[in-house]
Structure formats: structure tokens, C-alpha cells
Image 1: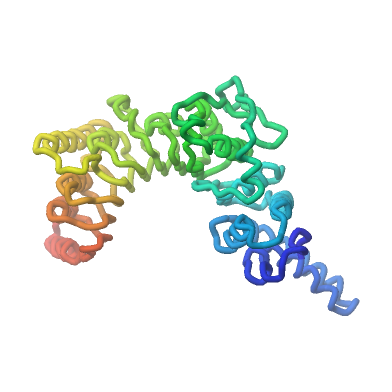
Image 2: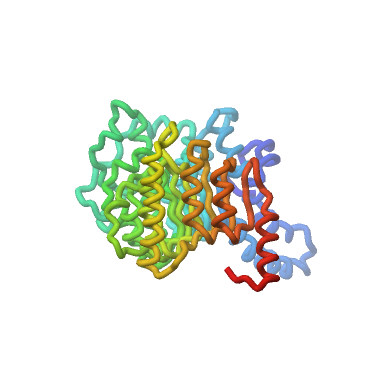
Length: 430
């Protein structure tokens, strides 16, 4: 049994799958104590090789959103056990110190998990780091909330940001109305967590997937610092997916700094108007826009993404009322212009998007959706909450290759399949 768990309650050991995984290699090693002396050497060899194979597999993935981790940390955070909080913190730090070099995929959704990963000198082989929403542990949270973050660095570059004695980075915090203490008392807490987050990013230059913390405090850092730090990852040509949760980084700014990025979740299209006429970002395969946006801004961006296969958006509109005929004419003109621009930039007659997803689709957006469907004639799969009349008509008229509809009121694509079969018999090629 691992030492930090020796004082844990038997109930935790029985209910937590994580604890069983943590103790399994040690239990295997104990098998030899029950064998005759003549078989002991063979047993030790078997256990050694077994441990050598199993331990890296057991610790390759840590996702603290899994039930076993949540049960352990939430029970402690709610003070439902008599176990002192320092014991769990010590156990986490021991785990990362011992097995951190095996971890490839880390979902660090607790502040103390990020802290343990940074303090471990072995957690340097991450391929993906997911943070998103962060929870704070009892005892640790109170202390963190009352502390002041480290003195801001005077430089803006990632290469000169310095480490602190606590393991986090000394970050170049700047004043911002978005992170004012008077209106937002959690600033210090989030800044402490971000110091550990950016330290962990710098310790793992071969990350292929990175999801930012869901923090307003991210916007208290200069954009130059974030871009420069991310650029360090591209020096290894590894970073492929980036989720800019709540960050004000613009989509053009990110794609220029990370030209090999394949998947991008973004929250800011304000810099789309600055895209140059012949500018291209051909590596991007998936774009996910997590805000309500002006559809014309999207149509200005899409022609510059000649390799885009999957497009997701929270909503194709920003108004709660139906658009005027003049507004619809402007969007239709933007759609026609997008097709012409895409052809002139990449030489492709059709935009290559095959998967289209819209999370929020009120009926007042029906005509806008129909215009977008017309821009994607190669569409094979569409995901929407529901389909309305104009969009259904556009799908039939424009999307010959449609293979799947994921919608609450329409899923049948037999008519599209039948049309393709009949055309194949006639020798018609699309």
C-alpha cells in the first residue's frame, strides 16, 4: 500500500478506484512473500517486469474530473472526513514526484493538482494539459485567497518570466478594468493558479493540446506574454489544439503566431477585419467559436481557412429580434463574397467544410443558417438543436453529399442517399 494512503479510511480505499490503481503495483510486488524460497527469484523477476509495464500505463492519464478523483477531493473539500487537508496535499505531491514522468495527459481541474504538478520536477512529458474550470481545496483555498500574487515581472516575454521559490512563474501582471479587485474579489486566487498553469506550460514544450483555465484573470496578462509563450511550443512543431477559454486573444493573432495549429477554440473575432486579402491559414482543420458573433465577421474569416473541415459556432447571430430585409441582404452579399474570395485565394471552387455545428439556433436565425449552409456545399454532417424550413430547403438544394443530420426534429437523410444512388446509376458525377 502506498505510504500516503496508509492512514486513509478503509471506506475511501474501498470506494475510490483511483486509490486501488495507486496501490496496485505495490500489491503485486508483495506476492513474492507468499511463495517458497525456490520460486522467489522468479517471482521478483516477474513482478519487476510487470511493474515496469504496468506503472507507465497506470499513470499515463490523470483526469481529475473522473468520479474517483472527484469523490476523494470533494469529500475532503467539504470536510466530510476527519483527514487533515495537508495529508491529501502531501499525497498528491508524492504521487507527482514518483510518477510525474509517466503522465502524458493531465486534466488538472483543482488548484492543488496544478501546484503538485509544478512542484514535481518529473512532470515534464505532458502531451495534453486541460484545465478549464478550477476548484479550490479546503484549507488551501483560504490561504490562497488572502495572499498577494508574486511581484509582477517587468518584462513581457515568456523567455524572461522568472520562477518563484513556490514553483509558480513571476508573471507580468498589468492593470485592467476587467480584473479590478473592487468588482471582482477572486483576482488574487485566480492569479496564483495562473502562475502554476503557465509554469507547467513552460515545463512541457512538447504539448500538443492545451485548454486554458476558465478565468477572467487571464486578461490581466499582456497578450505579448501569452503569444510568446505559445510560440515557444511551436518551436517543437507539436501544438495542434488550443482552447482560449475566456481569453481576449484574437483569432488572427493566434493563427499568425501558431501557423501549424489544427484545432482552435476561440472567443474573440474582433481582429478579423485586419486579415489581409491574400492571407491564408491552411493548417487549421477545426474552428470552434464560443460566442454569439456577427455572421458577417465569420464570412470574412472563412475564405482564409482553405483547409477547414469542421466549423462550430455557439450562435450565428447576436440579435434577439428578426433581422431586417436589409440586414439579410448584407449577409447574403457577404456569403457570395466569401465564396468569391475563397476561390481567388486558394483556387477552390467550394469551401471544404464537411462538419457544421451550431449550439443555439432560434427560429429567427433560420434564413442566416440557410445562407451558411449554401456556403458549405461539401457538407456531410450538420449538428443543430432543430431545423427550420429555410435551412431544410437549403440543405436539399445545396448539400448534395449530406450523410448525417443531428437534430431534434429531423434525422432522416434517406432522400439524399437515394438521390446519390440514382445519379450513380445515371453516371452523374458531382
